[in-house]
Image 1 (cartoon, helix red, strand yellow):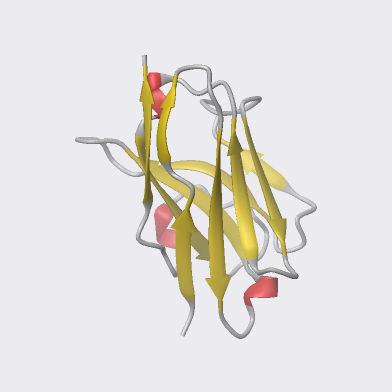
Image 2: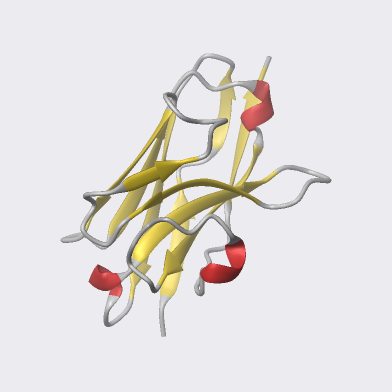
Length: 125
C-alpha cells in the first residue's frame, strides 16, 4: 500500500518562502513520477509541478514558473516543493501525488493514483 504524507505548510507573508515536503512509501516508488497540485477555497484542484522518476525532468504550471522548484531525493523517498516569492493567490491546500507513468509530464489529476491528505499554505498580503 502506497502512502503519501505532505508537510511544511503554514502562514507566510507575501514575498516569503516555504518548503513543502512529501514523504512517500511503497514498493516501487523509485519508478514513480511525482506531482504537486493545489486547491484554493471554492476552486478546482490545479496542477502546480511535476518531476520524473529520476529527477532529471521537471514541469511547472505557468503561474509558478520561476518561483517554485520541485526536487526529489529517491534515497529518502521524498519530494520537495520550494516556494519563493509567494503571493496571496498561492494560498491553497497543497497535495502531493504519485504518477505511475514515471515521465513527470501529467498535469491532470486523473493520471495520478495515490494522494496525500494535503498541507495548507496561507500567504498574507
